[in-house]
Image (cartoon, rainbow, N blue to C red; front, side, top):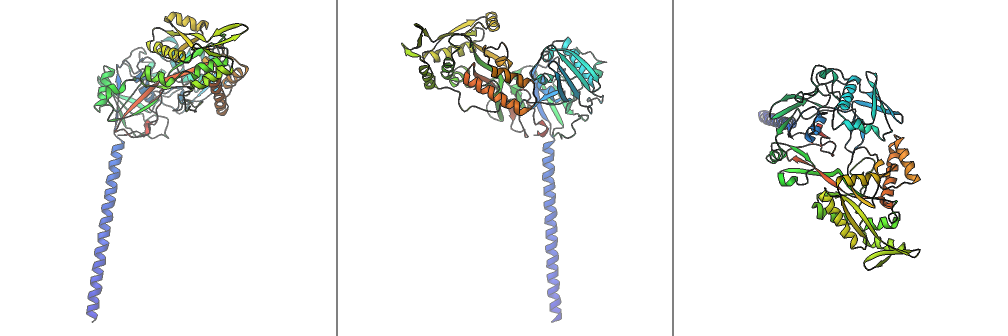
Length: 525
């Protein structure tokens, strides 16, 4: 009997041993599998990405005229003041700046910065860059057009003196800084020289067909971990060649204002991100004109223009309608309109309420025994055929509502003289917007609409002299209300800026037209 008990106990013991061994083996296999998966994920995240440059000229960011290089240079070089994804001025090589008086700024520099070659960054580098921009023609030279003197206070402090007050001057400090010590032994005008930078990546190799960027181990921003170990920048002789390389999978991203991008790269194999661009077209209404001084006339014109019709018929829906110059995503104005403001019935009612009569398909009004008809001239550049088509479209739309607009096509010289002298009823304008939210063009002294009120003067003075973001936002909200309710201008549309990403590219992509590389620290393939 005892022997049977021992036999059963022995069998149970063996079974327990087998079960435990099985569980241990399964656990080890699962751990191994998880480890393998994690390893595979890590391998994916350290792969390089491939960018492209068409018609390469130089890696010197102050000398290049190539938009591709200007964008990629933001990974290599840094400005005093950077621009965020919502177009806000943010510290970069400058940690802070202060307006001492209307024309004097003091700028404090970051003290823990080294160039990629290990040299120390100081105010002497800012002085060197300032001198080069003043001496040579550069896309950044206009940033300093009102700066008369740069004074070095100490190694990490500079002062800038201006010849006039410049609203939001800090937005002009977005030019890349170059190293004085590097150029002490190099020819600045030699376009084949590869400058050192202070940015997140550095140039580690230059070949005839490509440039290699690797992590800058001297980058001061230790809090930001970069996923990408390497960026290969392929060089192409033409934009068409660059687009074709993207199409076949040899480039991972292209950014362009080209309205016909899909004609070159197709519609599959990539993720497009379209955003409102910086090219802004609008009509300035001369509010000193007898008819246009009447608010109901300006409103009736605005409500009678179908912007969607213009974008569709002239630009094949490749532009965005607009109602305010800063509605491209600026931090100062985040509101987006649900409609384009088109309302012909409201336009008619406004005129009727103001005493206008619709007769013989035209609006007219009799005052002091004198009858005046609603007829105005609009100037447009003859050299810009798209704008001529827009003007003709607007003229046709308004004629259908009984408002006569005579389109006058001017030469570039005639147009500029009319613009300068404000000798127009209406004028179709185009401007390349800046991240700088200054609205002086629209509401400053001698503005294009000849439109001034005490309230506007007070607002414009307040935003120039405050750094309080809530005050600025509230003031700009009020400016937008005046712009859209009192109609000194009619915003029409903006171009589209497109960034196309390879379907293999992963990460946080939050581009704007100033910089397509926001979030690149998270990218991988």
